Length: 124
Image (cartoon, rainbow, N blue to C red; front, side, top):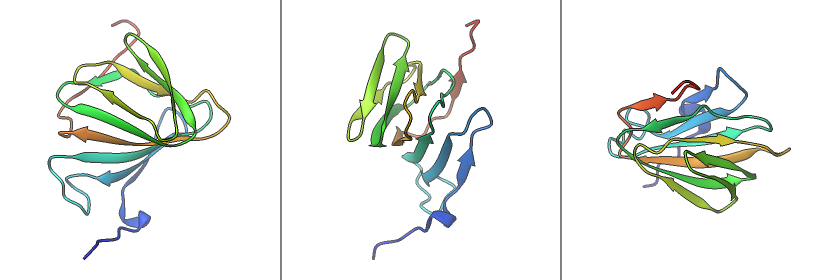
């Protein structure tokens, strides 16, 4: 039988640096208990941007649900729109920016879940 998870049963996070928010969909500690996959829904409001970072040990996939925004990597910037999928490999620096007047939302999947995230500062 299908398991329906009300939004209230999922962990919701709000960023401390801007207004973007994250809803944990699949985690080891949530109602699903998955150990080989992690998934979140991320919503960037107009003007939000994330910090530069990379994951040392996982493939990172982004499936755009609504709006459009920028995916920056160490070598390029691409505009992602609804329905598109982007993949970032282990060790690849990346960050997002919503440069539009509408929300930009996507599901992100990590395979396997990251063991280490490295945050990049301007002096690195």
